[in-house]
Image 1 (cartoon, rainbow, N blue to C red):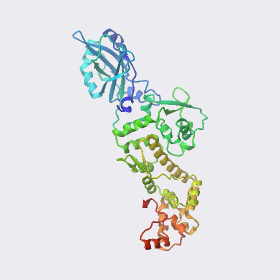
Image 2 (tube, rainbow, N blue to C red):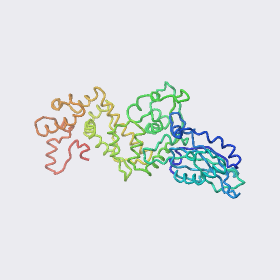
Image 3 (cartoon, helix red, strand yellow):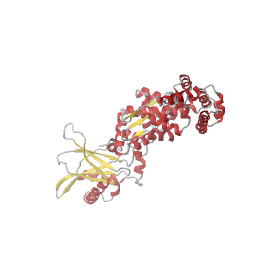
Image 4 (tube, rainbow, N blue to C red):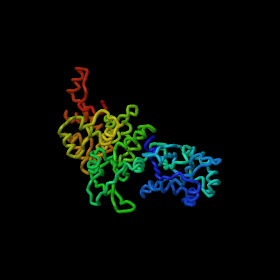
Length: 458
């Protein structure tokens, strides 16, 4: 049974199998239902007030089912949840030492409606619950009972998602009591990355905290620079500030794998990234484009190639890195622009692999954010320019916006290749242009590769 299918909306109300007189005695309580039936759904979905776990499907009563003076089992009646698609029924025998709950039924709402329609006459006419609204309840028969036993039941209402978008990781884990609360002082300076390092053992797992705390976005500089408390709001019943953390990070991976088994890898990753929050569309699209669904792997090279076409400034970053110019790379790092050097592919079916990919994409995004700061972009231009100011004067880079930068560089490359603009071998290398000596070597040997091939040559 899928974890989120069997545990998304738990109900822990337990009722004993009772005789007819007891059923009638408590029958007066079951008419106190909300006047608006959809109030049940609203209460159940009120995550901010944390009422979803406290307003679970209630077992209204359990009664013997007697036909022709013969005990035929026990009828279990519970309130209907309007957002549930399936229900599980569990039972245990109180007379059996060490007895634990065992699932006896797993039915969809269509099957339950048939069961209810069959037994509703007995409930109303024989048991005397004439005013009971059949549309607000479900009824099932447990025919595996004995008259000299006392049983306890519990019902779990579930919602089987129709798409990966409907899988709510935080709600599922909270409903299963698989999250712990960590209180924070209002003057805490811990960032999301700090908090993950302390509580989960690695900053790379910070995304797992974002997943179960929707107000804490993972991608971008906020997780690295701003205190967590600046994004938190006090709980409804107190002024406490707290963060949920998973008791075991593998529970998240279990849910993710179940999601993949029902839906596609791409859809599951896309909605997981959306739940984590903070990733721009261009980065999300490049991330998804870089996944091989057949092999369940992510390609670092494919991502870099994809993002450089969507965001021109990455052309500069990657050109600098690929020239292996130590001085230029050092200057770039001094600007807090650290392009990850990851290569090859990475499996994304493990917590470690998924965390590495998210960390890689996050570092790429943060580098772009630093590059967009006032004054930083012009420093990047100076690194590329090298010592020949004529190159930049011709390209008008100092006056070009980020959108026109790629076109300007292409224009410079073309002028150098045409011989209308002079450039040193070092500058040609920075722009990915073969020097005369390199071209001669290719002509003589029939082989060769440019100094700065970039990902276009991969």
